[in-house]
Amino acid sequence: MPRPLVATIHISAMQKNLALARSASPGAKVWAVVKANAYGHGLLNAMRAFDAADGLALIEPENALRLREAGWTRPVMLLEGCFDQEDWRNAAANRFHTVVHCVEQMEMLEALHLSQTVNIYLKLNTGMNRLGFRPGAFRDAYTRLRALPCVNDIAFMTHFANADDPANEAVPWAEQVRAFDEATRGLPGSRSLSNSAADLMHPSVSADWIRPGVMLYGGSPSDTLAQEFGLRAAMTLSSSVIGVQHIGRGDGVGYGSAFVATSPMRVAIIACGYADGYPRHASTGTPVMVCGRQTHTLGRVSMDMLAADITHIPDAGFGSPVELWGDSVPIDAVAKAAGTIGYELMCAVAPRVRMEVKE
Ligand SMILES: *Cc1c(COP(=O)(O)O)cnc(C)c1O
Image (tube, rainbow, N blue to C red; front, side):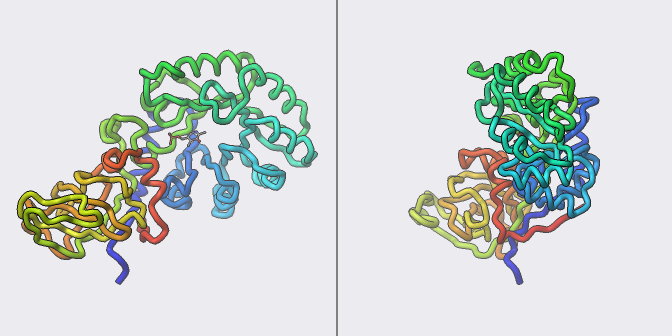
Protein backbone atom coordinates (compact mmCIF):
# COMPACT_ATOMS: atom_id res chain seq x y z
CA MET A 1 0.00 0.00 0.00
CA PRO A 2 1.30 3.49 -0.79
CA ARG A 3 1.87 5.95 2.05
CA PRO A 4 -1.36 7.45 3.33
CA LEU A 5 -0.28 10.98 2.44
CA VAL A 6 -2.43 12.43 -0.38
CA ALA A 7 -2.94 15.85 -1.93
CA THR A 8 -6.56 15.97 -3.11
CA ILE A 9 -7.29 18.62 -5.74
CA HIS A 10 -10.84 19.96 -5.75
CA ILE A 11 -11.86 21.01 -9.25
CA SER A 12 -15.18 22.50 -8.11
CA ALA A 13 -13.40 24.72 -5.55
CA MET A 14 -11.13 26.06 -8.31
CA GLN A 15 -14.16 26.73 -10.50
CA LYS A 16 -15.91 28.62 -7.70
CA ASN A 17 -12.79 30.63 -6.91
CA LEU A 18 -12.47 31.59 -10.56
CA ALA A 19 -16.10 32.76 -10.56
CA LEU A 20 -15.38 34.82 -7.44
CA ALA A 21 -12.29 36.37 -9.08
CA ARG A 22 -14.40 37.34 -12.06
CA SER A 23 -17.22 38.82 -10.00
CA ALA A 24 -14.77 40.98 -8.04
CA SER A 25 -13.77 42.79 -11.26
CA PRO A 26 -16.97 42.97 -13.27
CA GLY A 27 -16.43 43.28 -16.99
CA ALA A 28 -12.77 42.31 -16.92
CA LYS A 29 -11.46 39.24 -18.69
CA VAL A 30 -9.48 36.74 -16.65
CA TRP A 31 -5.99 35.43 -17.16
CA ALA A 32 -5.98 32.47 -14.75
CA VAL A 33 -2.38 32.20 -13.57
CA VAL A 34 -1.14 28.59 -13.77
CA LYS A 35 2.61 29.04 -13.30
CA ALA A 36 4.60 26.67 -11.10
CA ASN A 37 2.48 23.67 -12.06
CA ALA A 38 -0.65 25.67 -11.22
CA TYR A 39 0.73 26.57 -7.80
CA GLY A 40 1.31 22.86 -7.17
CA HIS A 41 -2.18 21.73 -8.23
CA GLY A 42 -1.19 20.19 -11.57
CA LEU A 43 -1.14 22.12 -14.86
CA LEU A 44 -3.67 19.95 -16.63
CA ASN A 45 -6.00 19.83 -13.61
CA ALA A 46 -5.98 23.63 -13.72
CA MET A 47 -6.58 23.70 -17.46
CA ARG A 48 -9.73 21.65 -16.87
CA ALA A 49 -10.84 23.57 -13.76
CA PHE A 50 -10.33 26.94 -15.46
CA ASP A 51 -12.23 26.07 -18.59
CA ALA A 52 -14.25 29.26 -18.03
CA ALA A 53 -11.15 31.49 -17.95
CA ASP A 54 -10.48 33.76 -20.93
CA GLY A 55 -6.81 32.81 -20.95
CA LEU A 56 -4.11 30.99 -19.01
CA ALA A 57 -0.93 32.77 -17.92
CA LEU A 58 2.32 31.15 -16.86
CA ILE A 59 6.10 31.51 -16.76
CA GLU A 60 7.42 28.29 -18.25
CA PRO A 61 7.55 28.18 -22.10
CA GLU A 62 7.61 24.37 -22.08
CA ASN A 63 4.39 24.29 -20.07
CA ALA A 64 2.77 26.79 -22.42
CA LEU A 65 3.46 24.26 -25.18
CA ARG A 66 1.96 21.50 -23.02
CA LEU A 67 -1.25 23.51 -22.77
CA ARG A 68 -1.48 23.69 -26.55
CA GLU A 69 -0.70 19.98 -26.87
CA ALA A 70 -3.43 19.25 -24.32
CA GLY A 71 -5.93 21.14 -26.46
CA TRP A 72 -6.15 24.61 -24.89
CA THR A 73 -6.93 26.78 -27.91
CA ARG A 74 -7.70 30.08 -26.16
CA PRO A 75 -5.09 32.69 -25.20
CA VAL A 76 -1.92 31.74 -23.34
CA MET A 77 0.37 34.38 -21.84
CA LEU A 78 4.07 34.06 -21.06
CA LEU A 79 4.41 36.28 -17.98
CA GLU A 80 8.18 36.69 -18.23
CA GLY A 81 8.20 36.57 -22.01
CA CYS A 82 10.90 34.81 -23.99
CA PHE A 83 14.26 33.67 -22.71
CA ASP A 84 15.74 33.04 -26.16
CA GLN A 85 14.92 33.15 -29.88
CA GLU A 86 13.56 29.62 -29.87
CA ASP A 87 10.92 30.82 -27.42
CA TRP A 88 9.98 33.64 -29.79
CA ARG A 89 9.51 31.18 -32.66
CA ASN A 90 7.31 29.00 -30.46
CA ALA A 91 5.39 32.02 -29.24
CA ALA A 92 4.59 33.03 -32.81
CA ALA A 93 3.77 29.49 -33.95
CA ASN A 94 1.48 28.90 -30.95
CA ARG A 95 -0.05 32.37 -30.67
CA PHE A 96 1.24 33.03 -27.15
CA HIS A 97 0.72 36.50 -25.74
CA THR A 98 4.27 37.36 -24.84
CA VAL A 99 5.52 39.83 -22.27
CA VAL A 100 8.31 42.16 -23.34
CA HIS A 101 9.90 43.64 -20.25
CA CYS A 102 13.38 44.64 -21.43
CA VAL A 103 15.34 45.86 -24.45
CA GLU A 104 17.12 42.52 -24.85
CA GLN A 105 13.84 40.72 -25.52
CA MET A 106 13.00 43.31 -28.17
CA GLU A 107 16.40 42.89 -29.80
CA MET A 108 15.95 39.13 -30.00
CA LEU A 109 12.64 39.65 -31.75
CA GLU A 110 14.05 42.26 -34.16
CA ALA A 111 16.88 39.93 -35.16
CA LEU A 112 14.50 37.09 -36.02
CA HIS A 113 12.40 38.58 -38.86
CA LEU A 114 9.51 36.24 -38.05
CA SER A 115 7.03 35.51 -40.81
CA GLN A 116 4.23 34.82 -38.31
CA THR A 117 2.92 37.55 -36.03
CA VAL A 118 3.13 37.82 -32.25
CA ASN A 119 0.94 39.47 -29.64
CA ILE A 120 2.83 41.45 -27.06
CA TYR A 121 2.25 42.50 -23.46
CA LEU A 122 4.54 45.45 -22.92
CA LYS A 123 5.44 45.61 -19.25
CA LEU A 124 5.80 48.82 -17.31
CA ASN A 125 7.80 49.03 -14.09
CA THR A 126 5.70 51.21 -11.81
CA GLY A 127 7.66 50.62 -8.63
CA MET A 128 8.03 46.88 -8.14
CA ASN A 129 11.49 47.19 -9.69
CA ARG A 130 11.59 43.61 -10.79
CA LEU A 131 10.67 43.45 -14.49
CA GLY A 132 9.53 46.16 -16.88
CA PHE A 133 10.49 49.36 -18.64
CA ARG A 134 10.68 52.47 -16.53
CA PRO A 135 8.04 55.09 -17.41
CA GLY A 136 10.64 57.26 -19.18
CA ALA A 137 11.60 54.43 -21.56
CA PHE A 138 8.09 53.08 -22.13
CA ARG A 139 6.98 55.12 -25.15
CA ASP A 140 10.22 54.43 -27.00
CA ALA A 141 9.80 50.71 -26.39
CA TYR A 142 6.24 50.92 -27.70
CA THR A 143 7.27 52.83 -30.83
CA ARG A 144 10.07 50.40 -31.55
CA LEU A 145 7.80 47.36 -31.22
CA ARG A 146 5.04 49.02 -33.24
CA ALA A 147 7.49 49.43 -36.11
CA LEU A 148 8.06 45.67 -36.40
CA PRO A 149 5.98 43.98 -39.12
CA CYS A 150 5.71 40.79 -37.03
CA VAL A 151 4.07 42.58 -34.09
CA ASN A 152 0.31 42.31 -34.03
CA ASP A 153 -1.46 43.51 -30.83
CA ILE A 154 0.39 45.39 -28.12
CA ALA A 155 -1.24 45.29 -24.67
CA PHE A 156 0.03 46.89 -21.47
CA MET A 157 0.65 45.52 -18.02
CA THR A 158 2.23 46.26 -14.67
CA HIS A 159 2.49 44.38 -11.38
CA PHE A 160 1.69 45.55 -7.85
CA ALA A 161 4.25 45.37 -5.07
CA ASN A 162 1.85 46.09 -2.19
CA ALA A 163 -1.73 45.48 -3.27
CA ASP A 164 -2.11 43.27 -0.18
CA ASP A 165 -1.00 46.07 2.15
CA PRO A 166 -2.86 49.37 1.66
CA ALA A 167 -0.87 50.90 4.53
CA ASN A 168 2.44 50.47 2.72
CA GLU A 169 3.87 53.92 2.15
CA ALA A 170 7.09 52.96 0.38
CA VAL A 171 5.27 52.16 -2.88
CA PRO A 172 1.51 52.75 -2.49
CA TRP A 173 -0.59 50.66 -4.85
CA ALA A 174 -2.62 53.73 -5.89
CA GLU A 175 0.60 55.45 -6.94
CA GLN A 176 1.41 52.48 -9.18
CA VAL A 177 -2.02 52.82 -10.81
CA ARG A 178 -1.41 56.52 -11.37
CA ALA A 179 2.01 55.88 -12.93
CA PHE A 180 0.53 53.20 -15.19
CA ASP A 181 -2.32 55.45 -16.34
CA GLU A 182 0.10 58.25 -17.09
CA ALA A 183 2.62 56.14 -19.02
CA THR A 184 -0.03 54.41 -21.13
CA ARG A 185 -2.32 57.42 -21.70
CA GLY A 186 -3.58 57.59 -25.26
CA LEU A 187 -1.93 54.36 -26.37
CA PRO A 188 -4.29 51.90 -28.03
CA GLY A 189 -4.37 48.42 -26.49
CA SER A 190 -5.82 46.49 -23.58
CA ARG A 191 -4.56 46.82 -20.03
CA SER A 192 -3.86 44.40 -17.19
CA LEU A 193 -2.91 45.29 -13.62
CA SER A 194 -4.56 43.27 -10.85
CA ASN A 195 -3.21 40.18 -9.15
CA SER A 196 -5.36 38.39 -6.54
CA ALA A 197 -4.80 41.02 -3.86
CA ALA A 198 -5.83 43.92 -6.09
CA ASP A 199 -8.79 41.97 -7.47
CA LEU A 200 -10.12 41.25 -3.98
CA MET A 201 -9.14 44.42 -2.17
CA HIS A 202 -9.12 47.23 -4.73
CA PRO A 203 -12.23 47.01 -6.90
CA SER A 204 -11.57 50.56 -8.09
CA VAL A 205 -8.67 49.32 -10.26
CA SER A 206 -10.34 48.86 -13.60
CA ALA A 207 -8.68 47.22 -16.56
CA ASP A 208 -9.45 44.90 -19.43
CA TRP A 209 -7.83 41.81 -17.93
CA ILE A 210 -7.09 40.66 -14.37
CA ARG A 211 -4.38 38.14 -13.47
CA PRO A 212 -5.47 36.23 -10.35
CA GLY A 213 -3.27 33.40 -9.12
CA VAL A 214 -3.25 32.30 -5.51
CA MET A 215 -6.92 33.09 -4.89
CA LEU A 216 -7.95 30.57 -7.55
CA TYR A 217 -6.38 27.89 -5.37
CA GLY A 218 -8.05 29.11 -2.19
CA GLY A 219 -4.99 30.80 -0.75
CA SER A 220 -5.17 34.29 0.66
CA PRO A 221 -3.03 37.01 -0.94
CA SER A 222 -3.03 38.99 2.32
CA ASP A 223 -3.35 38.67 6.09
CA THR A 224 -7.11 38.26 5.76
CA LEU A 225 -8.24 34.65 5.94
CA ALA A 226 -9.14 33.15 2.56
CA GLN A 227 -12.48 32.07 4.04
CA GLU A 228 -13.38 35.69 4.73
CA PHE A 229 -12.94 36.44 1.04
CA GLY A 230 -15.28 33.51 0.33
CA LEU A 231 -12.50 31.38 -1.18
CA ARG A 232 -12.40 27.59 -0.95
CA ALA A 233 -9.35 25.43 -0.44
CA ALA A 234 -8.45 23.77 -3.74
CA MET A 235 -6.05 21.33 -2.10
CA THR A 236 -6.50 19.09 0.92
CA LEU A 237 -3.28 17.57 2.21
CA SER A 238 -4.34 14.55 4.23
CA SER A 239 -2.64 11.59 5.84
CA SER A 240 -3.08 9.30 8.81
CA VAL A 241 -1.60 8.43 12.18
CA ILE A 242 1.07 5.74 11.81
CA GLY A 243 2.06 5.44 15.47
CA VAL A 244 1.12 6.59 18.97
CA GLN A 245 3.43 7.36 21.91
CA HIS A 246 2.41 7.74 25.54
CA ILE A 247 4.88 10.11 27.16
CA GLY A 248 5.33 11.53 30.64
CA ARG A 249 6.50 14.75 32.22
CA GLY A 250 10.05 15.55 31.08
CA ASP A 251 9.95 13.40 27.90
CA GLY A 252 11.02 15.01 24.63
CA VAL A 253 9.53 14.55 21.14
CA GLY A 254 11.55 14.24 17.95
CA TYR A 255 14.93 15.67 16.85
CA GLY A 256 16.54 18.07 19.25
CA SER A 257 13.81 17.23 21.78
CA ALA A 258 12.48 20.63 20.83
CA PHE A 259 9.25 19.86 22.69
CA VAL A 260 9.37 18.52 26.24
CA ALA A 261 6.17 17.38 27.97
CA THR A 262 5.20 18.99 31.26
CA SER A 263 2.53 16.36 31.94
CA PRO A 264 1.50 12.93 30.59
CA MET A 265 0.44 13.09 26.93
CA ARG A 266 -0.58 11.00 23.97
CA VAL A 267 1.36 11.84 20.83
CA ALA A 268 0.32 10.89 17.29
CA ILE A 269 3.03 10.31 14.69
CA ILE A 270 1.75 11.37 11.28
CA ALA A 271 3.04 10.35 7.84
CA CYS A 272 4.08 13.75 6.47
CA GLY A 273 7.41 15.52 6.68
CA TYR A 274 9.54 18.14 5.06
CA ALA A 275 10.45 15.79 2.19
CA ASP A 276 6.76 16.03 1.31
CA GLY A 277 6.80 19.81 1.29
CA TYR A 278 5.50 20.32 4.83
CA PRO A 279 7.51 23.28 6.17
CA ARG A 280 10.28 22.27 8.56
CA HIS A 281 10.10 25.70 10.15
CA ALA A 282 6.58 25.02 11.45
CA SER A 283 7.16 24.97 15.19
CA THR A 284 5.23 23.41 18.06
CA GLY A 285 1.67 24.68 17.96
CA THR A 286 1.10 24.58 14.19
CA PRO A 287 -2.56 23.65 13.59
CA VAL A 288 -3.45 20.17 12.37
CA MET A 289 -6.65 18.14 12.52
CA VAL A 290 -6.84 14.53 13.77
CA CYS A 291 -10.10 12.55 13.69
CA GLY A 292 -11.94 15.74 12.80
CA ARG A 293 -10.66 17.53 15.92
CA GLN A 294 -8.39 20.55 15.98
CA THR A 295 -4.99 20.05 17.58
CA HIS A 296 -1.38 21.12 16.98
CA THR A 297 2.07 19.81 16.16
CA LEU A 298 4.75 18.99 18.72
CA GLY A 299 8.49 19.46 18.25
CA ARG A 300 10.42 19.52 14.98
CA VAL A 301 9.10 18.30 11.66
CA SER A 302 11.21 15.34 10.43
CA MET A 303 11.83 14.32 6.84
CA ASP A 304 8.95 11.84 6.71
CA MET A 305 6.95 12.41 9.89
CA LEU A 306 5.61 14.95 12.29
CA ALA A 307 4.03 14.68 15.74
CA ALA A 308 0.74 16.03 17.09
CA ASP A 309 -0.90 16.20 20.50
CA ILE A 310 -3.85 13.79 20.77
CA THR A 311 -4.11 13.81 24.55
CA HIS A 312 -7.59 15.33 24.28
CA ILE A 313 -8.73 13.13 21.36
CA PRO A 314 -9.38 9.73 22.97
CA ASP A 315 -10.62 8.04 19.81
CA ALA A 316 -7.49 8.97 17.84
CA GLY A 317 -5.10 6.08 17.23
CA PHE A 318 -3.28 4.11 14.57
CA GLY A 319 -4.90 4.81 11.18
CA SER A 320 -6.86 7.89 12.29
CA PRO A 321 -7.41 10.45 9.52
CA VAL A 322 -5.34 13.65 9.56
CA GLU A 323 -5.79 16.93 7.70
CA LEU A 324 -2.50 18.84 7.34
CA TRP A 325 -4.22 21.62 5.42
CA GLY A 326 -7.46 22.09 3.51
CA ASP A 327 -10.96 23.26 4.42
CA SER A 328 -10.54 22.83 8.17
CA VAL A 329 -6.89 23.81 8.55
CA PRO A 330 -6.21 26.90 6.41
CA ILE A 331 -2.96 26.53 4.47
CA ASP A 332 -2.24 30.15 5.38
CA ALA A 333 -2.39 29.29 9.11
CA VAL A 334 0.20 26.54 8.63
CA ALA A 335 2.30 28.93 6.56
CA LYS A 336 2.10 31.62 9.22
CA ALA A 337 3.32 29.20 11.87
CA ALA A 338 6.31 28.50 9.61
CA GLY A 339 7.07 32.15 8.89
CA THR A 340 6.01 31.94 5.25
CA ILE A 341 2.94 32.32 3.02
CA GLY A 342 0.45 29.81 1.67
CA TYR A 343 1.81 30.37 -1.85
CA GLU A 344 5.11 28.72 -0.90
CA LEU A 345 3.50 25.69 0.71
CA MET A 346 1.19 24.90 -2.18
CA CYS A 347 3.99 25.28 -4.72
CA ALA A 348 6.33 23.09 -2.69
CA VAL A 349 4.26 19.92 -2.34
CA ALA A 350 6.82 17.27 -3.28
CA PRO A 351 6.55 14.94 -6.27
CA ARG A 352 6.42 11.90 -3.98
CA VAL A 353 3.04 13.04 -2.61
CA ARG A 354 0.25 11.19 -4.37
CA MET A 355 -2.19 13.54 -6.09
CA GLU A 356 -5.87 12.71 -6.44
CA VAL A 357 -8.43 14.76 -8.28
CA LYS A 358 -12.01 15.28 -7.15
CA GLU A 359 -14.63 16.98 -9.28
C1 LIG B 1 2.21 35.28 -10.27
C2 LIG B 1 1.73 36.46 -10.97
C3 LIG B 1 0.40 36.89 -10.82
C4 LIG B 1 -0.57 36.24 -9.85
O1 LIG B 1 -0.29 36.69 -8.54
P1 LIG B 1 -1.17 36.24 -7.29
O2 LIG B 1 -0.65 37.04 -6.14
O3 LIG B 1 -0.91 34.77 -7.10
O4 LIG B 1 -2.58 36.52 -7.62
C5 LIG B 1 -0.02 37.96 -11.58
N1 LIG B 1 0.82 38.60 -12.44
C6 LIG B 1 2.11 38.23 -12.58
C7 LIG B 1 2.99 38.98 -13.50
C8 LIG B 1 2.61 37.16 -11.85
O5 LIG B 1 3.88 36.79 -12.01
